[in-house]
Image (cartoon, rainbow, N blue to C red):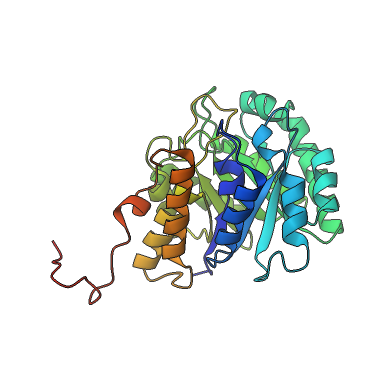
Length: 312
């Protein structure tokens, strides 16, 4: 089994739906907390127009902070989302380690999200990815709405595979499939990833699920079964795409890590710290978050039960 990677995207995908703009100082404190937990990649923000997504207006400032000397003492990989050439230029100027960029398999979602057709977006993203790689940066390309679209409904698997093949033909082999609308099911996840791996067994595959209909964690397990090793999640289950018909939160990071650790994986990640952070996020927004483990607490290991407690 390939080494599992946990990519925390809460400060980008998690916050972009929130009406209450989080102050830069609060974001900085949350990111610092995430960096200390032992996750592998932290997405600091996205380089989008602040008029469209005000929550991301301080992305450049945040990257400058965390790429300055001492800003990221553990050397965690810092990722940023870009949609166009201007965003890539901004990201290169402030030290992004890994650029995330994608193409929607839905024409309607593509136009709403990027104002580009699928064909135009594919050509531009490939050119941008090559430019980022020439600059010595890591790149992850994704297919959004890979499992369905809130506007169009089912998305043909052949359309998703055609975009993946375009990426592979361009030499791009770090790929993510994103369930933007939350329509994925475990069976569909296994089928699509099997077909993706059939195109090239050596690619690095990531998964990005939304919990709109309650299947995000089940879909992560389905992806794991067929060889996916990189998982994107959001602290406390925050999130959702503002440019889809029905928005739902992301895979909850602490729930995912709890599940992985119960299966004997990624014991190096500080789950109690993630739970504390999720509780802090809930306090800030003044409401219960979608995550489960931050409310129930982690299941203690056998032999570590509190005195007098019984396992039911």
